Image 1 (tube, protein in one colour):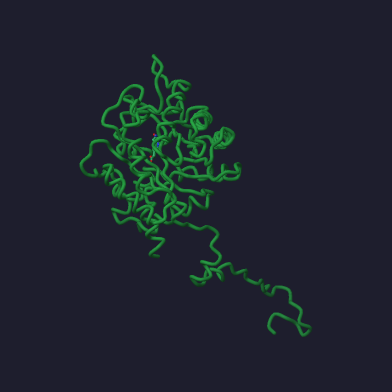
Image 2 (cartoon, rainbow, N blue to C red):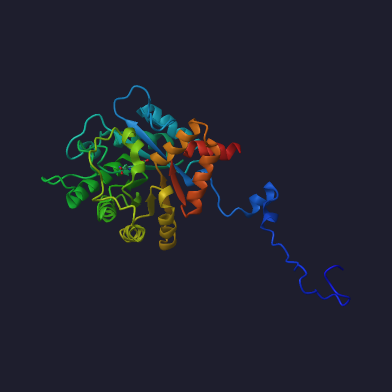
Length: 341
Ligand code: PBG
């Protein structure tokens, strides 16, 4: 043979035959790719965040979130029934009240929009999916902060905790399955857990917004809830520079009794998500937020990306980074895409 002498030995200067390692072998057919896929995406892992607004006659589109609306009480119930039929894991409800005050009293009022919506939805779907509610004052306060303010205008942590405890009870009384404290007050999970237990609501779970960052990507959400916020949330939400701190927040929440911990936003924080997943022994959720949704929708509208492929790739990447559960405005649509192939 060329390159060898009579004894079959390689001669100096001859090329060396290196066997090619071929990872592509496992990518050749759809069946092979399916068989070796490391990450799955199923409707049961998805939670749909939804907005219900007091006093609406018909659903009102949110311009910066094409396809997402502020619901009426009726349209909310219909949409939640659809979500249950699609096999979603759950819904996360946000209320938009008609009036607001300094202390966000609409949040603790049993007749407040979020509390009545919880009851409507639970009556319609029962145990078919998990009904969760945002537990935060920002939609209900006239100043738009997630807590109450001190006379000199700072967010008062411990005074806010008392209201969170009351809000948790109002939501539990309304029939919610899990509350989602999202205001980033220190001690909020422990206080909410204790309040629920003391009132006989031990079965109500806590999905804690544990590592929640002060993000520019919340922009469209402000429109979704008609937020009045001026200024920012940097004294309570986390600095985007910090990942170790995100793990610390998650560990604290687990110690305080969180059933699920969450990282938010998702895409700019996939590293935090992975670290949290590796650090805790409870399910980890990620919130694929309004700005992340809007970016894909805007680019797709201009024909710059393939919308459906981008949606599924986005959600898969969040799963791959470590999320067991994903809150996403695409939850219903993704479930349809997964079902119809
Ligand atoms: C606070 C809350 C916010 C979001 C969910 N809960 C806004 C904020 O913290 O500024 C944002 C969700 C999104 O942007 O999709 N109640």
